[in-house]
Image 1 (cartoon, rainbow, N blue to C red):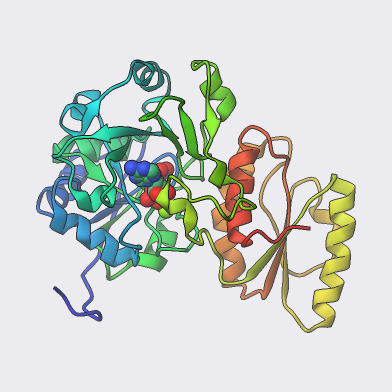
Image 2 (tube, rainbow, N blue to C red):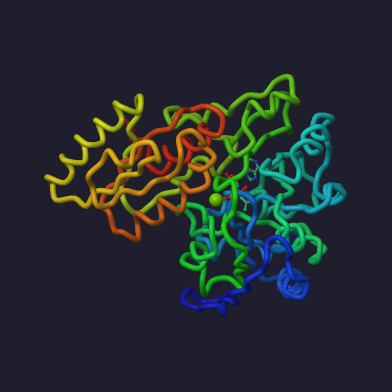
Length: 354
Ligand code: TXA
Ligand code: MG
């Protein structure tokens, strides 16, 4: 076991996401098959990958991230035939979901085989699996000829990384390689859907919405623990219980119709500034010119909420670079992808909303 202060030499490798260069993919794949760690882009956020069948390699992920030991990892595959050794039983509706949404931002929870190391599942009898829709991720999995375990490539508790500089800030000197493959697209982590029980249940909302799922399934439920107000309910997805996506600054969300939001934010901003605080405002394309503050960042366009999803984590990190004391953020409408956006925002704000 390496000492706490031991640093690893981290190689940075730029790969073209539309035509990944084969020699570079092979170099990264060799690190995976030799038991090392590689951060790579997916269509959701960057992941920190290691051989999913190698306990020692998986341990390196937990150490680099400072991740709680009981929080299980998602296994990434490039071909459905890889399910065979990982999954005990594939329910009928899983085929429909995989056909429609893979590759893509949907993680499925299956009953697991004994081949899956306990280190991955945190001792659970289930395993999370997804096939990412990203050329670099898929080529890396194919050429390592292994399933790759990968949580988001951030320090545990920080916002997930949506470009390689976010990863470098958190994990330089702690992992063997960081692939720079540009910005990720969706910007929020995958939807996690538990299909190991009777009714498919969303454990974490994401890019694939409940409406998308109900197009192909007769019934889908949300895990009751998703709502922050349900503090007494133990989440089925261990990751949901941790403070997450947190910027260094405090954050408060302001909800209402757009006019009310702007008024409330202007008032709050004055109050905080009077207390000597450095205030950041997370605005939208529709509202940014209404504020008179130095630290306004536009997260996206209310008419196209996917732009907000895509930029949210980057904006949270930029507020930290600006060293604001408090972020006042506009709520978005909780429908479609807005449910996932608000889920991450509420976690970043520790539930503070007015
Ligand atoms: O988009 C994504 O899913 C990204 C990219 C890199 O693929 N990955 C990601 O991984 O977000 P991570 O580790 O940050 O989040 C995985 C979530 C956690 O909330 C974890 O508790 C949950 O999935 N999870 C993993 N295995 C599970 C299981 N067997 N049962 C319930 N929840 C599980
Ligand atoms: Mg994560």
